[in-house]
Image (cartoon, rainbow, N blue to C red):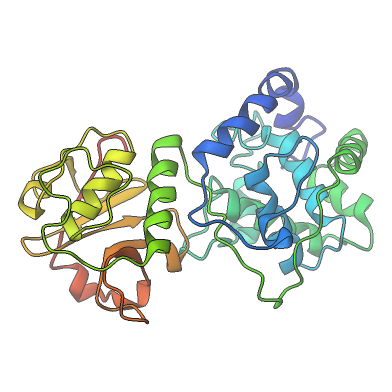
Length: 326
C-alpha cells in the first residue's frame, strides 16, 4: 500500500508479468494444503489467472469482512498488482511499503490482522496480509463504494482502474457464507519442502492409524506404503518427505539431529521418551503433529494434535530442534 501514485506493483510491473505464470505453478506445490476439501465452495472454485491455493484466502477474508461477491476478486487484483501474488512479498517499496499486500508500517500497526489464528500479525504471511487488506477496504467504504475504497488503499486513479479491470478478468467466485460450516485447510506453506511435509502430515492424519511401537524402524527412507509408526518414525517420515535426507531415527537420534532451537517454519520437539512436530505457520488446529493418545475417537497414530493439549509446562520438558534452513 502506498500513499503515492507509484506503488511497488507499478515499479515491478514487467518482472511481475513475466513471473506470474511461474508463481501460479509454484504455489500449487509450495503451498500444499493438509487435506482435500469436499465441496466446491470449500475448495475455492476456479478463477482465471489466480493461484488456486490463494483463492480460499481471498474468499474467507471477503466473507469475514462482508465485502460481497466482488470482494475476493478485488483482493486478488490488489495482491497481483502489489506483489504479483506474493512473488515480491519480501521486497520493500521505495516508499517503505512491505509484505504480501504492501502496507506501510504505520498502517500495518493500525490495521494488521491475525488472519490464520497463530497469535501473530505478520505482513509477510498471506493470510494476515490479505485479511488486513479486506479489513482496511471495508473501513474505507467497500463494498458500497469500491472506487473510493480502492483509492484509499492507493491514492491513484490509474491504480483504481487497474484493480477493477483485473478483478473483472479474475472473476473469483465468492466463498461460503460465514457460519455455513464449509471449511477446509488451505494453509499456505512457505516453500516446497515444508509444503511436502505439511501435505504428508495431512495424508497420514486422514488414515487414522494406530500407534505401533517400533513401527517402520530399520527402513530408511520409510516408503509411501508404510502404515506402522511410532512417534520417532512418524517424525522421521515427514523429515524424509521434506528432502532433508534424514535417516529413520529413534528419539535419541533426533536429539542430535538438525540444528538446535526452534525453526522458522518447522520445530521438532524431542526428549528421551517422545517427539512431535510443530508447523509454526499453520493455524492452531493444524499446528502440532505426531502420535498422541489425546485425540477424540481413540486413535493414537500420526496426526494433528490440537494446541489445547499442550501446556507451556509440558512443552518445556522437550528440547527444540529444527531441520537445517527450515
